[in-house]
Length: 190
Ligand SMILES: *[C@@H]1O[C@H](CO)[C@@H](O)[C@H](O)[C@H]1NC(C)=O
Ligand SMILES: *[C@@H]1O[C@H](CO)[C@@H](O)[C@H](O)[C@H]1NC(C)=O
Ligand SMILES: *[C@@H]1O[C@H](CO)[C@@H](O)[C@H](O)[C@H]1NC(C)=O
Ligand SMILES: *[C@@H]1O[C@H](CO)[C@@H](O)[C@H](O)[C@H]1NC(C)=O
Ligand SMILES: *[C@@H]1O[C@H](CO)[C@@H](O)[C@H](O)[C@H]1NC(C)=O
Image (cartoon, rainbow, N blue to C red):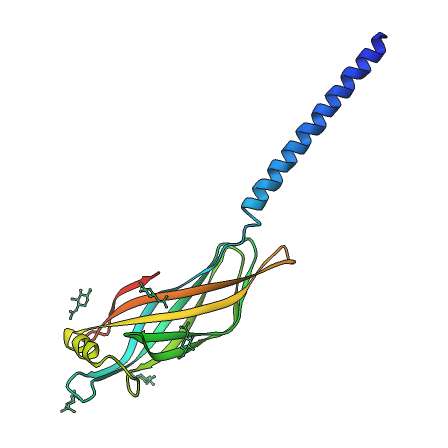
């Protein structure tokens, strides 16, 4: 073999090594990309804060009752690298599994890696609702009322303006309302 040919062979081998290294590098980049940026996570929905207004109740009345207005701030947290667009929905307030009020959540959009906040006012009343009377009396006499706020947001996450995936985000928050002070003591979301 001529010296020049040997040299050419060596050059070729070096060239192949570079190509393989390049392919491996690209594969790793694509893999990392697929596992982070392209992975679509379900957004979370929770109540960030709640205040109570116009609370009235009477445990001695027959039937016992309560009415109040909840002013809730709902936070839709979107960890994706693309926006989450959700349809209009309803937030239900329940007492002992019975719906005692509902409020409208207007359709909206949580930007990429951002939290969208919305205010919702919900009129709550036990009047005319079939309710666990023993539990109601018990709670009204204890001075604390336990309410749950449930909602389901259906929508789509869009990545890079073309990849779309349906996602459904559920909210399930429980709160304790102090009947005397109208303060919300505990606010826990699943
Ligand atoms: C609550 O009470 C305020 C006055 O304290 C009143 O302006 C408002 O209309 C009441 N809201 C509801 C929903 O009844
Ligand atoms: C609660 O209801 C009872 C029985 O209807 C009534 O006598 C009482 O005045 C009511 N209390 C209040 C604070 O409205
Ligand atoms: C209501 O619950 C809160 C927190 O659990 C507690 O600190 C408070 O004392 C309770 N209020 C009454 C009247 O029981
Ligand atoms: C809210 O309540 C209505 C009926 O009152 C029910 O159809 C709906 O599924 C409830 N939504 C949630 C999220 O629980
Ligand atoms: C909401 O969460 C509570 C636990 O904190 C659970 O017992 C209940 O079944 C949940 N409700 C829904 C509708 O998922």
